Image (cartoon, rainbow, N blue to C red; front, side):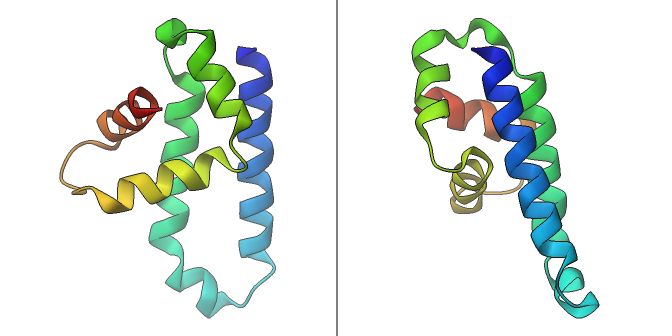
Length: 94
């Protein structure tokens, strides 16, 4: 199940990244912070500890877009905390 989650996250990242690269340079520049944060989210989720259990992994697999859901959660929080802590907080909230 961890492998499926990893593949889904990588697929979502690739799709997002390619969508960004198809736009103008100006649009890429305006989305630079989003791209950076989502890249870090992807890395955190892939490196995530597997001790969360099958239920959490199933919930994550059931989400339409894992990276986007985590990104929206993080935007609502204060960005002063380290991103890895925020990603862990999001996973625990599932």
